Image: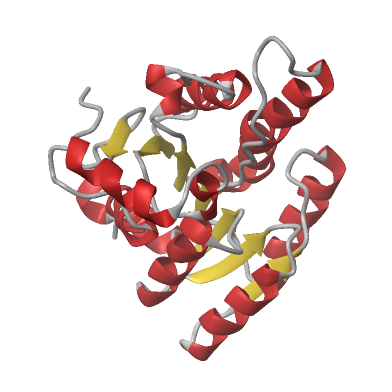
Length: 250
């Protein structure tokens, strides 16, 4: 039996309380995963209840992924209450807008600590168990801004997501052949993040500039995660899957 199939039915999703993270949690539960949600937002408790209603085990932990001690304690809790984690999805991220010329360095550090540092800490916390099991999967959620850069008010966010793509490639090499590590790179997606700077009508109008003619939905990104986590992707590692309707082509 494929080792990944043996150990990949317990998943951890960071930032799983809403938007893309919530869609990922529910998509995994639909595919018979038990899911732990790491998220400081209480809405994560409601998502966990949705998973339970689907007949799967769920665990909500209010974790700040930039806190090394909190991450390690949460990883131990997952092991004790659900079992060995076979799939980690590093989705947690923030995007407080600020221009590069006016950005306080503390804000730069906070964004990098959560978006990039959090992915590293969570990967580091769960990798030993995956290596011991001889199989594991990590999927990092980046952004098209990590490839293209941010035209305004997002240098910190773009840097964190570009770093996440580089981290993916590094961990994929270091932890092969036992752990596969890949990235999903969303494009414009209907979540709270873009609506912080625009309205729904303007957001959807951007679809006219995308080859497939529409903006993305959180479920599109979730399907990309499930694709990389599935047995059909067993020979794929260190790659970036752009789920953006063709807006960015690699």
